[in-house]
Image (cartoon, rainbow, N blue to C red; front, top):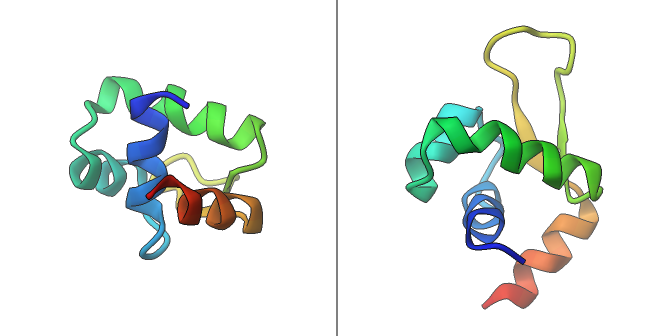
Length: 73
């Protein structure tokens, strides 16, 4: 797993967040966050809970994502 993906997963383990919050908490540039979140969604590790919104989308871990985060440490 890439460093960006693992940092994003760790940032999401606390509570649901917007991409900006994930970027700030994980020290990932905003230009990379959308790609990281898309990869996590495609793998079934994260999900967007308000997909129809254009701004302030909120992401959270799926049960699979929570299991993966537990094993990262």
